[in-house]
Length: 530
Image 1 (cartoon, rainbow, N blue to C red):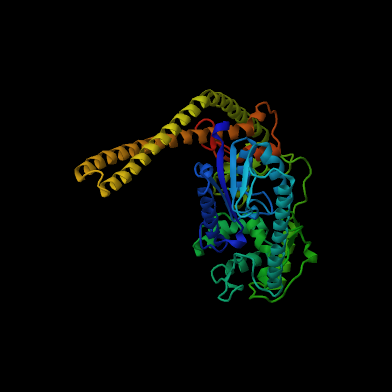
Image 2: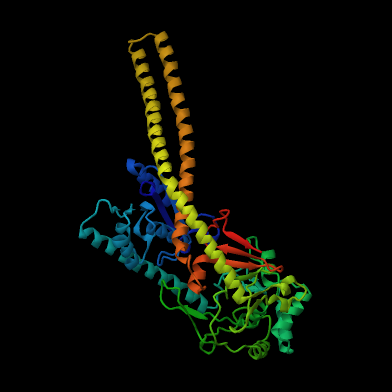
């Protein structure tokens, strides 16, 4: 596979900087700017003109590597499938100088990856001394300091607006809608009565389950259904009132006309570690907008929530806990205490008429089914990899021959074109007459057209072979991920994260496994087990 290593332009933009954040564009304009910059740069170097693919992370911060595009790129690097990476500048790759330095100084050289940062004038193929390493380290440090500084300034500005009582929290909560004035909310006349009724029922002693069941029986639209109806953008719809949807409304003080600006905070900038602020320590800003309920109703409703609050259970959690999904309503299956054996769909408690009541599966039996499915995938992968290795040499030879033919046809087309120019010069200078000029011109035009048609055919054949190479790369990438699990005897949470996206359970007992890789049977990402 060494001769078939891939080349990439990597493009990235943060949400704060792009049009995507404001909803004005599906792809931020700065991404297009980076694309043009990379292409113009590569056009100046013959060895970098062809064979480049794009990996784009639009709307992701550079302070960490938790980005889908960069994770895929680095995984390909570890599999020795990358030859060149081109970025507009170092900040596009990463703003964390320690992580960026680790990849540039150790990982990329170890895997033979050429790294180019255009605006920084850095090309790893040209730098081998320690001064280059110092230059890159300083650049990365500056990028990280700049990122932290701009993040602090943005956070300070937003925090100031929150303390003034402005609504800068994204979508308005159910029962409200965005006001005519910027950063304000006003009562939604359609949804507010439902909120008031919900609190009234809680104050009259109704439990959360009883409230949810009543709303479902009366077919009252859920918050997500209401949001989907009033917004032009597509919203994921949950058609069933559940424990969480009712509780989330009952615990939200915003319906009293007050605002709680800070319920949590990030431990440090660039980190995903969030620390929740205890309720008694939270700041409350009163009378920031029109109230739907009184403060007395809110406090009384909290007694219902506390009375139904369950004590934390002890025991080891099942590795399937967050992966089993009900095919009827889309909610996660639950089994309550860790000692319980059967997963059920909780929606059946709130909507007894739904098929969700038929959704159930035994924890241990489901784990055995998944283990068997993983082993089958590993065995099929092993067979396919052996076939790939057997055919890789042939494919590589065919590509090399096609490339040689393509270069030949390009030369023939260019020579015919140049000959036409010289022929015209000879005619103007009187070296040949008009009849000779016309005859030879037709011959050269035919030669050029023949070469161009042959070139088009060869390039089409090359595209087919390259697509086959890409398919092989995907298989090798997946194989590196799962072949170590051929002999597994039990499921663990880390293993579940690597292999499974979700497991959909149907009323008839069948399941649909959604993998984090392509199924070796049909190339899809799902496997149905009956």
